[in-house]
Length: 416
Image (cartoon, rainbow, N blue to C red; front, side, top):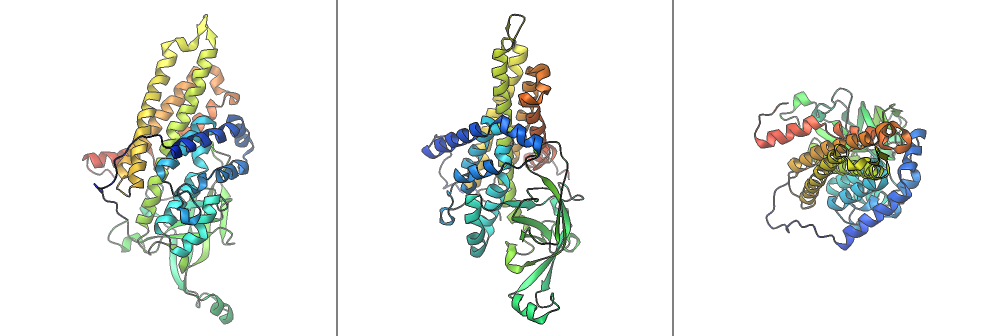
C-alpha cells in the first residue's frame, strides 16, 4: 500500500489538546503505580505483568488505534507515541512501549488497514480491551534484517484433499486452506499470544520479479498443536518472553489471509512504521527516565562539599543528550502525524527511530556514570534501563539499516 503526500491535509500543530493532556496524565498515573520497583521485581522473576496489561486495557490504551465502531478510541500514532513515551519516562522504562507496540500497535493497524470486515469484527474489539494478545512473526534465524528472504512457506491446499475422512472434509471445506511450515526467532509474546500475524512466502523469491512480491501474511491461532514455542534466554525485558517458534504442517483457513495473497509486503509496511515510531518513543522515554533519576541523584549526592550536579562534567553530558532527545521527539511527532494523515513516512520514521535511540543511549550512559558505582547496582535501576535501551539499537531495525535507508533517501547509492 503506497502512501502519497496530500497538500489538502491540515497543518501539523503542537497544541496540547484535551485528549493529549488526558493521555499524558493517565499514562503518568499508571507509571506511578507501576514504577521502577515493580519492573525490577518482574525482571528478576521473569514474570509477565498481567496487572499492568489489564491496567492499560482499563485506561483504553490498547484501543487507541482501534476505530470507534470496533470499541476503540479512534486515535492515531501521535497519541500512541505520546502514551508510550510518557509511560516509559515516568517509571515503566521499556515496558511502556513493549506491552503496547505489538498488539495495540502493529496488529491493530495491520487489521484495521488491511483486514476483511469479518477479521475486524473478530479481532479489533478484543484488541481494544486487552482481551486478545498478538505476537508478530517476522524475524527468522537465516533472514535476520532481510525480511524479503523469509523461508517460512505457506502452500495452498484444498480442505477436501487435506482430510482422509470425507465426512470431516465436507464439514470443514468452506474453502481452501494454507499449510504453513517454517521457523521464526525472537518472537515476543509468542508464549502467551492468542494469535500471531505470520509473515510467509506463498511464492518463492526466485520465482518473482521483485523481492517484495510473493509475501503473504496470515492470522494464526497459537493454540494449534503443530506450533512449538521455545523461549530464548536474553539480556533484558524478561517480564515477557521472546521465543523461537516452529511451524510444522499448520493449517489455516483461507479467510485467515491478511490482505491479498503474494501482496503482503505492503501490509507489513503499514505495520513496520508504527513499530519504529513506538521504538522512537521508547528511546526518548527511557533516556528521560534515566536522566531524571540522575538529575535527582546529582542534587542529593555531595562530594568535596557540593552536590555532584554542580560539576559540569556531570551535568553537561546529560543536558546535551536531553536536548537531542527533545529534538528526536519532535521528529517522532512529525513521523506519527504523517502516518496518521496516510502519507509516506518511511524517511521520517527511520530518522525518528535512529536519532531517538542514539540520544537515548547517550542519556542513559551518562546517567549511569553520574551514579558512579551505584549505577551498577540493581537497586538504582539505571543498569536495567541501560540493558533495555540497548535493544533499541538492534530492533525493530538496526541503527545501521535505519541510516542506510536515510542515506539512500539523501541520494547515496543503495548499499544492500
